[in-house]
Image (cartoon, rainbow, N blue to C red; front, side, top):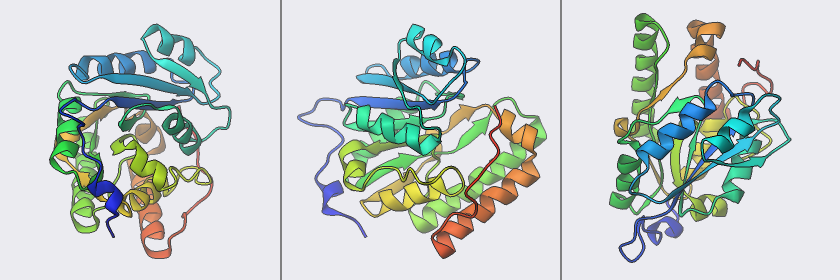
Length: 252
């Protein structure tokens, strides 16, 4: 069901480009965070933006490198991606808030495509897109490409497909929806976020919003295992409305 809230929140106000806040949850991401922030500032112009790195109990130089790159750093000592994303949502000042992961590189055209998509669809609460893994082998990139195909089909069928590390949403709409469920640690968190957004408006899933991401976690855990775990989490949320698991292995 679409809320009236989304119908009355245009992507621009008085012809002025909306301010975009980009929130990046980060735990011990000193190897990646600098390039991630730099890619945002390269993609953003001419759109006004702020970059918020949520330091999620890091023990390395993540926070210092993020500040050096031009981001605003806020702490969130409670570990967990949704804890960090919720903190970033509450800190954000933009009309639109984008959430990406700390090892993501935004293509130069991402910002323009994301803002244009929400401007063209005032009924939409959010827009998301696929992730390509720049450091996997050609075969593994082909496999993950089929995951993106499945995500695209899910987006067309359900209207609620969200990649947590690649999504832009209307801040007030998502605050009205309650924001992120911080009781969810990993499995099924993106599905739950998609359902919350879909209750407030359309959720677009667009190939034009493809980002580049490190596939190191997939390679270390194994694509077969990760694919199985993601599929089980997806169907557990869709069919039973609850997480498949409550614990996961953290791989840096």
